[in-house]
Amino acid sequence: MNKTVSNRLSLAQFSREILNGNTVVLAQAITLIESTRPDDIVVANELVEKLLPHSGKSIRIGITGVPGVGKSTFIESFGKLLTAQSKKIAVLAVDPSSSKTKGSILGDKTRMDELSKDPYAFIRPTSTGTTLGGVADRTREAIILCEAAGFEIIIIETVGVGQSETVVRNLVDFFLLLMLAGAGDELQGIKKGIMEMADGVVITKADGENVSKANQAMADYQHALHLFLESDSGWKPKVITSSAVENQGIHETWQLIKDYVSFAQSNNYFKKNREQQNLIWFHDTLQHLLRNKLNQSKEIKLKIKSFEKAIIDNAVLPSRAAQEIIQEFFGA
Ligand code: GDP
Image (tube, rainbow, N blue to C red; front, side):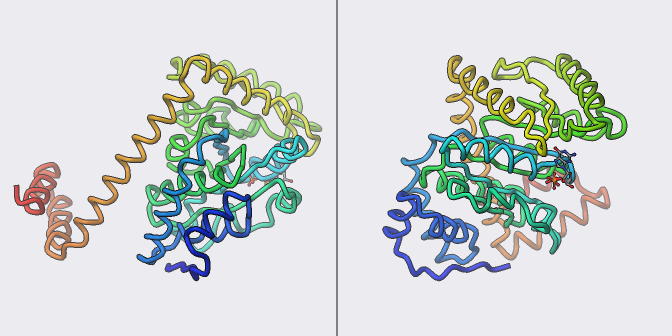
């Protein structure tokens, strides 16, 4: 899929308008960074680089959960709480499904109706990319652009159905997991590994007949979280119940995130984590570029294909095959 952007604006115009908080230009710039056209890529890279010094000042929050858990309803209430305090909030929806299928889990319905009309909010799916690494790259760049445009809270929303959570974890300061009460066997809904990444868990739809089930789930999850090893930040994840439709637990979630930020800033983890994430970005890109380079060579590509077949047939050791490819490519 080739997305293109007519470069009506110069780099300087893009940059100036984004710094002025122009969300129409911000949206165009995000389309530009999603473009696969070589000339767009050059401009996009320059733009992100130019705006990099103006980024980094937001709180980056990852929100994940299975389809139907209530993500968009929750983000709408949460976002409105923040915009009511005159805080600028950007929601970037990372949807790994749309790169593989035509449909998209996040994009098919009208989402966050009120928030999308709020002048303090900016909502944007950033789902392009044929690989999760590509999705992560585009999202990182989109975060930088949003921060340069003055957004103070950036939400990265993703669907809790695959590996995208791990990718998103590496892009954010705080990772929030939304869960349903009593959806089958308590801990089965979401993989244990994902729970271990969470800084906070929100049990959604805690209203009406669901309240006691939600309270029970809160106790169960809080107990389960205690069993995990202490996280790198030293933070102890907390569980909250919430009803987005009754506006319960929304303020508490924001308080929890603020508590986390103070905690992580005071022990310097906040800064260290971002440094670490930039290193991951660097190494991910390096690997990504190397793989692209390898694939640009016709002979190497053919050789990789034939090794793949031989590996399936158990005729060659995978590590040996990889070494041979590298030797041939670099002539070492
Ligand atoms: P998403 O797929 O995770 O984004 O979930 P949605 O936000 O679209 O919500 C899925 C369904 O749950 C919708 O029918 C919502 O109306 C409903 N829902 C969301 N939040 C709540 C809530 O706090 N209470 C109740 N009772 N229903 C909710």
